[in-house]
Length: 282
Ligand SMILES: Nc1ncnc2c1ncn2[C@@H]1O[C@H](COP(=O)(O)OP(=O)(O)OP(=O)(O)O)[C@@H](O)[C@H]1O
Ligand SMILES: O=P(O)(O)OC[C@H]1O[C@H](OP(=O)(O)OP(=O)(O)O)[C@H](O)[C@@H]1O
Ligand SMILES: [Mg+2]
Image 1 (tube, helix red, strand yellow):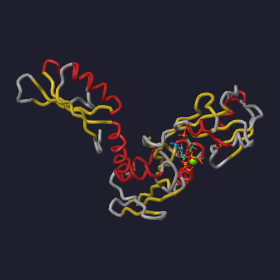
Image 2 (spheres, protein in one colour; image 1 turned 90 degrees about the vertical axis):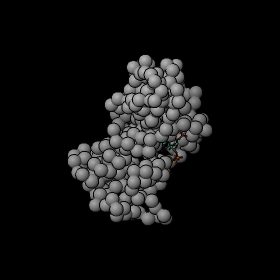
Image 3 (cartoon, protein in one colour; image 1 turned 135 degrees about the vertical axis):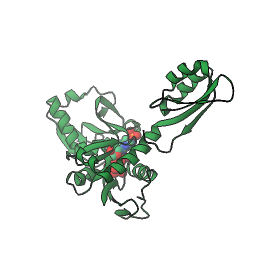
Image 4 (cartoon, rainbow, N blue to C red; image 1 turned 60 degrees about the vertical axis):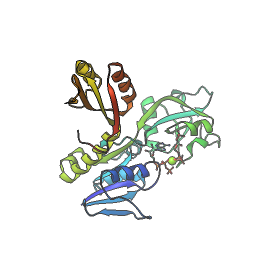
């Protein structure tokens, strides 16, 4: 039976459960269960603190897990990233009081508060800077005002928490993070049950990034239309009963869809319809 870890709380938990459920697995908790069995698919889902997931996976106790890239790297566990999952996106950056001229290269001898000490230790080593790490569990942004740190390194998403604390990001982010599916080694992909899980999850992740674009266009403009919507292999082109016209169907990137519709309209496309894709294999 495949054993897969899911975050039991925090920013990644809900989205991880939703993704795995959309991929056809039963991993719904009704209360505070630590384990949910999916007997149909022969998978055991184990609910763990996201910070601990890479540790269990690296020791081979669990086959795979959903965690944050930042958490996996900070744990220094030997795990491989099988698939980025497209949610829980954030950066990990230094921040200092707004308006101060402190930069990371000037952190020598200062106190840096963080919940991700390994990431910071490694970055400071690269910069050859000797600073004191103050390890905190959360609410790191308040630590400067409370006098325990001079600078912080923390997760930044919208940046609102930093602004509310009177801080600003300084320097390039140490890391761009998102939720990831991790395993002990990439060799694990050779196992059939693992591959099935991976492909089902990938189907949902990819489907969320694409839409299906359908439209009618004069045959004379088909070549240009295929440049605008090249699809994955190539677009599907079907005849229309109207002489000189064809219908085109093509997967396109969700983020480009409005520009695509503008371009198609300019070259004479009619009846453009865009629909979501639930899941896919490409
Ligand atoms: N505001 C956020 N937006 C997106 N991702 C976030 C955010 N805060 C934390 N994360 C990501 O969530 C993971 C950390 O999860 P964790 O559950 O430990 O902390 P949390 O989300 O801050 O929850 P809590 O503070 O309730 O324990 C990391 O991968 C981190 O990058
Ligand atoms: O850039 P933002 O959109 O403001 O998000 C970033 C904040 O979100 C998380 O905090 P959380 O609410 O989990 O509290 P915590 O600091 O106690 O972990 C993270 O640790 C940052 O503090
Ligand atoms: Mg937090």
